[in-house]
Length: 439
Image (cartoon, rainbow, N blue to C red; front, side):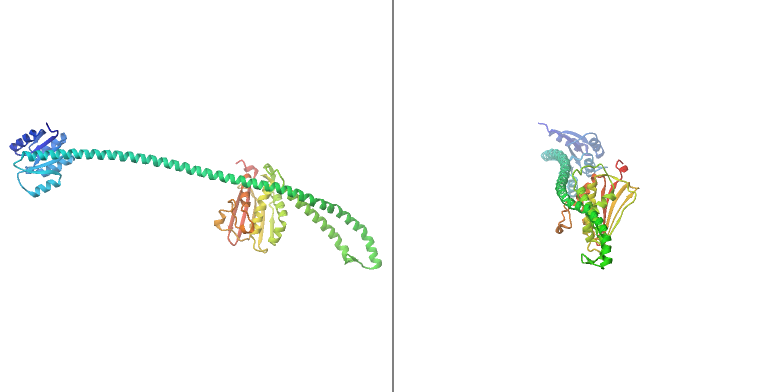
């Protein structure tokens, strides 16, 4: 049975070459003879071979040099060295270059057959190994592709998951905002009912005072000539434990004070009723910030008086009205004022409240500057967060500024804060002018 394989045989002695060629052909291999190294390299460059059987001692190019250049042309080429010299150093050098056997002349047909079979077997194994490596590389590439695709898919899923989490957090935040608004709306409804009842109970006796005080004043003026005549005839006499000569100067002031107090009661009740009035969803009202500030100051007159002896109020002139809801704007100012006077450590600290406009930005503002404890930069970033408060022990809910920020957003405006611990805080409610709302 013929062996399959192409053998290149090289020897510079024609008789040896012919004999070697015949022996290899007898073993069933296809043989190509070459008398020197250059011819052998030309054959290798022209077509592939399985084995190279070469002599060592050849003129021009010896077997070692031939093997070096041959494997450079065909890396898979197996080599067998044939030599008439038993030189161990040459054999070692040949083996280092990849030769699978070193056969001494004269040749043994059996040894040659074994060497050729060994070479072909090794070549087959190398080809199988190479094929396995190629298959392994293909599987590795496919696996890497699958990993890359899966990684891309996981990245997409992760990105979608992050977007879903962000959307869920946003929905939760909006739900919490709506819940707070419902709580605030319910509180305002309850406050409206309470204030309406209290206002009615206060207004009835106050109306009695308002109507009767002028009558009593006129009666006093009618009695005054008679009392003066009596004083001239009988001398000074006491009135409510005070000499008439002194009392007649103070009684007009007392009547005036009664009327002024009654009017103040009427204004406070009116402002309370307006502040708690239902129907606060109307956002198309014209708001005069000076009027809103005055109303807020009336409601907070008592705590402001206790908190500071140095309250300065500056009203900007010619402020254009802003569009929105008066009660909500007033609520923002009240919340800012409460935070300001609650931060004051003692009544000798100053509180400056002012209104103004900035024509460059098209805004109108209420600014409140206090000499309070100030806010750290860490807390300043969180003061608009729902339920965040530094006054938890004092009953603070942490909703005032959060709700105020929502109200300012409804008006197309914003809240601004500038603070230094130990020096105070400047809070600013900035509203857009009507002409800038559409920009």
